[in-house]
Structures are given as structure tokens and as C-alpha cells.
Length: 227
Image (cartoon, rainbow, N blue to C red; front, side, top):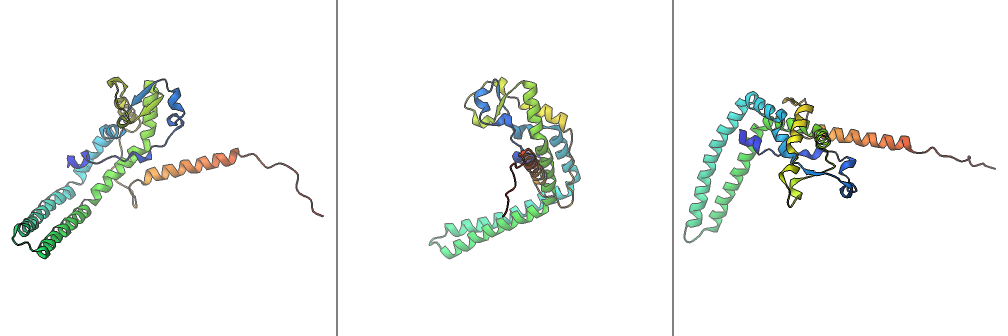
């Protein structure tokens, strides 16, 4: 089960871009650092504790998924063996090969759908955990940048060469642990993955529109007269 969590890529799509990340800041940046945001989220106390809680709370579902997965894999192996046998036959029977190949493909798709349905509650709980962390990640990043006196933060993948001391991933983890020590593993009714971040982004957009409307100057000039 730990492999499932290790492979779970935290979708940090909810990170809002603040002015400090804008392009003009690049030329003015006095201190530049890198941080692996996904790694920071995965190493946070909130994520670590939540995954442990999920493993305990959903143990029956996880065990069922793993057991059923082993059975389906065995059934798939039989179909793959039949396909390989057809391929080796001389002369080759293309119709039989295609039928055997389709049987393998159909079985693989059906098995994936079945296992996905069994593990849906676990996947939803993981998504909810990730969503809560994503919601506060931008705040943690800004706090880490302030603490390390960094003006510009970039993704490690965008860097060709760097010294180890410019990596502030640990600082992001520290700030995230402070800001968000724990999260819930129980999604509310009707929750959809990414919903919290989407709602936050919508609120920010609404606030920006409202601020622009309030700042707009009132129309001036005399009213037109009619004859």
C-alpha cells in the first residue's frame, strides 16, 4: 500500500501565482532558490500521518483490492499464455491471434475498472488529503522564501546546475508542518478531487473582480439634454 502513496503525484495545481513569481521579478531577484514542491508535500507531517490513517481506516478495502488484484492477474496470465501460443503456431492463424489479443486487452481493461471501483474510497480519501495540502502550499512557499530571504523560487527541473545550499525544500516542509500540522481523511459528501482548490481559485477571482469594480472611477460629465 505504501507504493500506492509513493506513486501518488500530488497535483499542486492549486498554487496561486503571486506578484513575486511574475516575470519582471527575475531581473531584480537578489536571491534565487529551488524547491521541489511535490516532494515537500509528500514529506509533510500532514501527508505522512494521513496516509497512515488511511491504511488503517481502509484496511479491509485495501486488502480486498490486493487479493482481487492477484486473482485477476492470474486470470490475465492465462490469457497471455494462450495469446503467446497462438503467435508461435505455424502457420499463423491471424484470426485466432487477433481474438486472443482482444481477450487479453478486454480482460486487462475490465480488471483495471474493477480494481478502480474497489479502491475508489481510498483514492478519494487520498485526493482529499492532497487537496487540503495544495490549498495551503502557496502560503508555505511564501513563508519559506521569507525565512530564507529568497526573492525568486524555481522548480528544480528548470535548473541546469546549482549548489546544494540553494535548495529550500526542507524549509517548505517546515513551514507546511507549521501551517498545516494535520488534515482530515474523510471527504465531505459530494466531494470531488480538486474541489477545494477550485473553490479557492474562484473566490480569488471573484475578489479580484470586486476590487477592480470598486477601484473603477465613477463616470463624470453632464447629462445630455433633449429638445
